[in-house]
Image 1 (cartoon, one colour):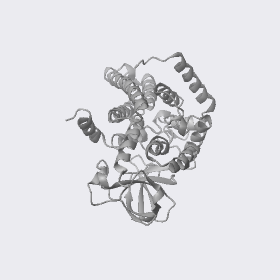
Image 2 (tube, one colour):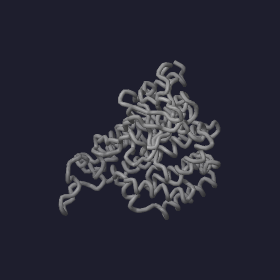
Image 3 (spheres, one colour):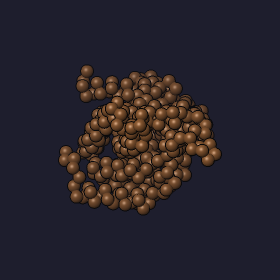
Image 4 (cartoon, one colour):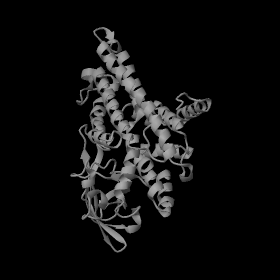
Length: 395
């Protein structure tokens, strides 16, 4: 690959940069910069802004309403979006279900659901993990029993991200309990307003409400909501997870976080000198920057391969592992740079007119603690190493 930008790429970068300068709402930009929790209204407003420009489905083919961008253009877009402190577009419909429907969905499903993802009519969430089936996803127990033209679903899903906002959920369900675990799973699309579904919040370690439990009690789902063939769900699940793991890598977001750490370290003093001049701290910053540059190149290579082959391969596990480790290291460096100011206790930013800590400390502890989950969800990093060992090293 030629990793240098062509004149056309540079022109595209300038166009994207100008778009964000002119169209990015300041309240959304400020919320992202400060690490605040973005509500449903902000995310939907940003979604609408991108869709109006035709830039929402960056990874979709043109025939399904996507941009048709090259891997380099997609990389440039993410880089500029992060530089502008834009939020990550809602991934469950765009980066997960969308590619699944394009490959496995019926024509009717594609024509109905894909436009609704783009125009914001549907907010999707993911029903994969269960209390007893996380990294060992194939052991899931949520049952779907065929009854005429419907499935009757019973079971429980957990860690359902942003399920409190969603009106639809795509689920892995067990449709045949008498075969090998991976062979008895199907992929269903379910309306969350269907009777028998209950969504309960789970509070995370930093206090936020991002994930949920979802309970299914005799939930009736039309057979037409089955994606692909019955008991083909494991194949679909693996396909979806390769897209999810590529998305988790978050190269652009790590680039943004690296610049924030450098800026913070230049302003922070230790023993009368800027922290960035401390040999041990500077060495950690240098190492994470080297790792990030290597991941940027790997990400471009994988995007290029996926564009030719139609789907990412098992090497997406590399991106998932390195991407999450890099982001966790950057959050830790920010925490160390802020020192005691990062301590999460009430009133640690202001007390009346008295400034007690820098603005950057406002949500730093929450971001650090929230980031611990990234090496677990989407398939824990330990599981990803096993995947690489089997599929790429053939051990």
